[in-house]
Length: 385
Image 1 (cartoon, one colour):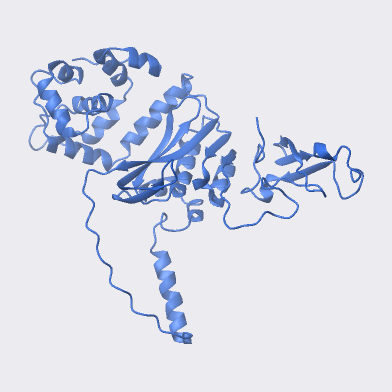
Image 2 (tube, rainbow, N blue to C red; image 1 turned 135 degrees about the horizontal axis):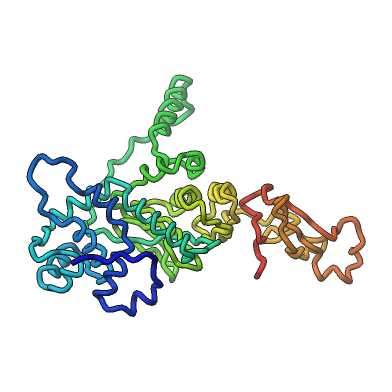
């Protein structure tokens, strides 16, 4: 069956109102399949001839998602039993249905390349050019993905030998320092503190992401710990268009915050024609390095503050706004992008205060956000639209 390629994208609601056949055609027509075929197709004329319809296999994997088919085995069963579905995916009557091994080999080739990322970015750029994506705000979060593999049996760790008591000798101290340095040098960028990602190139970050299935833990809506064995999907989504602008796939035990910088760098470097002004994240991403990365891409961070055993600073409220002598909070007034300065004005309670004209109380208070990117952002913390 010939797939008709259309010139523009479609609205999501229009897609759901279509019949399955037309819905497949609408989706398939937007997939730039040629780069994918270049990766999975045979590279030489020698050897046995290829008898697989790779284009139809790629389309069938897409249809599997649309039809909520859980496994490749179920997909093959559907292709064998559903004549119309088979034709909709692009298989000819003379084509043999691929085996699970054939799908597995093709998926392995795709996994070892970045072609799907490039195709997705091409789609997003097309959506931006056509006006489907005009977001100035992105939201970043993670979701759990359970592995189909069974979790390995827990291995009991041997008890470590008790440490030698007392102060180390000079030779032992030097040996210990050297071992620590060697151990830190051998760590990957995702095993180091998040700050190490700031000056690491995007390609190196994405290629270093751990992808082995691991045990993950996360608090659910009831505040209880939820466990799963598998992976995490990290997404940067346009808050208006709901398009996935960047994504990352990792092991289930990767800290959510360690995936934020690769996503932010990906949007800045690969989708530079999309001007992002704000980045919204939850308290799990409250790390100074993430604020620094958002500042570097010339955006403002809207991140819930995660209080970590620290008392409120003297002269400021819980949102880090200055307070007057009687501890009334100054009101956020405006932000000056030229000087990167927040402006606070005198509290309304100070109108009839006898200390209003005292030198201790300022009428206007200004602070540069670069004083502490962790605390100051525009709009200011605690302000309302």
